Length: 78
Image 1 (cartoon, helix red, strand yellow):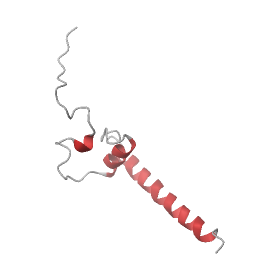
Image 2 (image 1 turned 90 degrees about the vertical axis):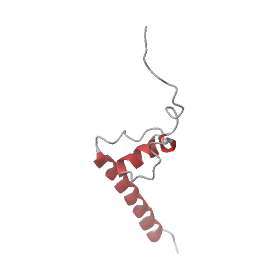
Image 3 (image 1 turned 135 degrees about the horizontal axis):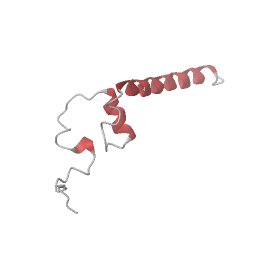
Image 4 (image 1 turned 120 degrees about the horizontal axis):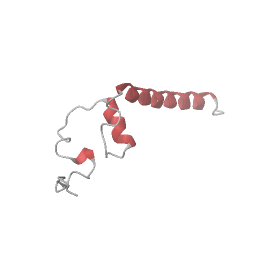
């Protein structure tokens, strides 16, 4: 069995956020941000084929914060 893989690159198995080609202060989109969040910075392209998934998670997080604020306002007993 012959393999032609070159695994000598030390940043190959490390987190994406610390790779030299990623960390150039470039803008990332919402899908990449949620991909990094859910994979613990190991992958930034799991939601790239569907960018609306990133917007969905952002809206769910916003609605959750709003619901908790409304709940706290009406049911605190003050």
